[in-house]
Length: 551
Image (tube, one colour):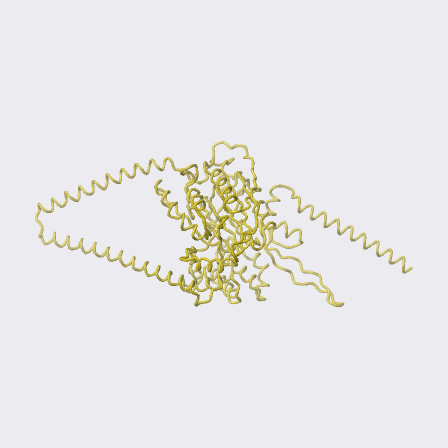
C-alpha cells in the first residue's frame, strides 16, 4: 500500500512538473515572440521592476525573501515574473513604490533612484527639495552617483541656494580625490580665477557704460549752456548723419549677404513631405574586432561603437550629409582607434531601439561604448519639462511623437549597461535635451605634462562615466557643410584624424567647439556644441578616452 501511494505521488509530481514546465515554456515563448511590432517595442522600454521574493529554507524553516527592485526591460521583467507599471510617466507614485522601501531601509542605490524620481518629476512637477534629501542620504554613505547628483543640485541651485564651491567639493568626493590633492587645488584655483575674470569683465562693462553716459551728459550740458556755435552744431550733426548713413549701408550689405547664406542653409529640423515615400531599407554593418587596449600599466578595456545614421526619411524631408558623416566616422574608429563598430543606416524605430537594447548583453564591466547619432531630432514640451527625441526613418511628422525614440529610452538603457565608460555624441536638433545636467565643473583633461596626464587618467579610468557631446545644445543644427559633411561632423572628424595621443572627451570638445561655432557663423547661424554628463544614467564623474593605435 505504501509503495502504491509513493508511486501515485511520484506520478502526480511528474504531472505537476510537466504542467508547470509547459506553462513556463509557454510564457517564455510568448515573451520571446511578441504579438506585433508595438508589443515588441513596448518590451524594450526600461521599467522599475519589482521581482518576486525567493523561497528559501533554513533548517526546517521555509521563508520568502523580500521582493527586489531592479531596473530592466519590460520583456525581461515579464519573463522573471516581476511586477511593473506599464510605460506611463503620468506621476511618480508608481515608480516610488518600487524603490522607496529599500531606500527607507538605507540602501544607497535605491536612495539615488528615489532622488532621481523626485528630480525628474516623471511627467509632473519636479520636487527638488525631496530629491536633495535622498541624494544627501546616499552621498553621505559614499555613493558616488549620489555625490555627483548632489553636486549638480548645488551647481544649478535646484532645491537649495546655488553654491559652486560646495558643488565642486561633492564632485571631488565622487571622484575620490583628497581635499589637499594638487589636481583638485589646481581646478579650484581655475574656478576662482574664472569667477574673478567674470567679475572684472562685468566691472569693466559697467565702467564703459558710465563713461559713455557721462560723455553724453557733458555734451548735453555744453549744448544747453550755448558753449558751441550753431555752425559747429550743424557740422557735428552732418558728421553724425554721415556716420549713421555709413552704418545703415553696412548693415544692408550684411543683411543681403546673410540672406544669401540663409537661402542655402539646410537644418536638421523635421518637415513633413507632401507625399509619403516607401519605408527605407534598414542597413546594418559590423566592422573591426574589440580587444583590450593597454598602455604601460593602464588597461583601457575594449572599445565598441554603435553608430546610427538616419538620412532617407519616409514621411519627413531627407538629409544630405548623414551617410557620409557616419560612414567616415565608422571607418576612422575602426582603423585608427581599434573600435568594434556597428553601423546602423536608416534605422526605423524598432531597429534603433533593438540596437540600443542589445548593448546590455554584449558589454562587460571594463568596456567603453561610443554611441553616435546623426539624423532628425525634435522636442515636445510637457508641462514644465521639455522632452527630446531621435526620429527614426519611419517617424511620423511633428507633433505626432508616437513613432519617435524618446531620450528617456536611451538614458534608461545607459543606466543598466555594465560598460564603465559611455560617450554619446549626437548631431541632431535639440540633442542637448538628452541630459538635464549643467555643463558642470569638470576637469578639462588638458594637462601640462606627461606626469599630470597620467595622473589624470589614473584617477578617471576606474570611475563610471556617462557623457554627452551634442552639435548644438537645445537648438536646431546645420545639415550641410564643407566636403559633404555637416559643420559639426567636419570638425569632429578632423580632430580625431589629426590626433596621435590619448585624447580625453573634454579636450575633444574644446578642440571642436570654436570651429563649429565659427563655421556656423559663416551662415549667419548660431550653433554651439555642448558637453556635459548624462544625469540619471549612472555617471560618477569618470571620463572617456580615445587611444590611437600605436600611441
